[in-house]
Image: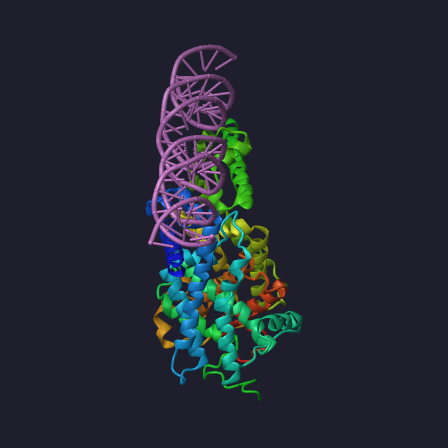
Length: 243
Length: 243
DNA sequence: TGTACATCAGTGAACGCGCGTTCACTGATGTAC
DNA sequence: TGTACATCAGTGAACGCGCGTTCACTGATGTAC
């Protein structure tokens, strides 16, 4: 009977979720390196050996948390893009909203952020399952730029000749419909966005920056300009709707 | 006798250095979280208790490694600034050389880099001793911009009014002789520079970027422009030698 | 509907490990007179 | 120059801890006939 089998399956899903939730709690309390199966089991009132029915090893639990974290921040970014501003709002504004949403998520989940954007956990190598979720934020940025390219147009950034082949290769891989120069600007901008967040989160801004959100918005606005988004202050306009 | 006391002191200095060297080796092999006093002692052929004559606890050894790492990358940046190009070279070129030197150091010492720019080690909070060394790279960038400001001049970046007070505060703290708008651009640029390096080092560029050095130079060049460095392509020029 | 069997979640004890830190000690190095 | 004493690097045993993982097991849930 599918409902009865469903019951067992539902129980499995619930316990799996409970394990991950408790693991996330411990992550927030102690960090990834100190995450221990025994402590999770203890807190859940189970024998530590029981967890092996759900995750074959500690590393697999870690992998699940990593995938979840990538998915969480990816979802936040996607939501911010589709929600941000009415149709009247500019793509530059949407760009900023996506970046702020990612930052907000990071501030709310610092240890999950560190898990995916901090130093790799020693002795742990990310398996293939993580590469899809890992690219979701990047895909949001690409989609946003594509959208801008097709409507407002983009101020295509300058591109030195020594970067031509790599820009073409990356564009072919990531966004064949965008000018290579835009892709060659976007990839670093993506890294730089997370540099801003990491510095704030990991304490490098302590005793240096006080008004962090305004400075972040300022920098993100600049990043938007660097990838070609028009903000009204730049009158020159290249590309655009099929022109 | 000072030579005899010197002998004891010199021995102390040598053993301290040997401990840190071995600890760095283990850092490179296993990462910071797995660094253990016992393993260091074992490798050195000492009793583990002997290390307590040199470092009162594991955390103090970690702190020493952190300070050393900040100092190492700071020195590399300073050397790159004073060495880069003859007097004929532009400040934009020097900016790029400093950034490349930092990146080269990071690629050569990935675990030491992760120690200072990755996620904080769980349960460890950096003591006061680290704040001086931690700012050395930033100081190099400030000095470079100051130099540019006094000779070539800087294209002062735009600054929204909402950031005015924070920009003024940061400028007063960090570089009272630079325009606040430049400081408000430099601080994020500093974070973004390390964002580029971290993404490369921590694996986010895997399967995305192949020609990493050219892309890095490209992005760093853009960062230089964002803080107002003139690269010949920007004819407008503000500020400058007292003008 | 009832019975025999298979599946599978969860138990609890155990293995073997490495860790940070403390402590009383030995013996060599340095110091004061 | 020689002797008594203080300093200090280094030892080795021990404490108490938590960890990941395995294994034989119990008992409840689901399945086939």
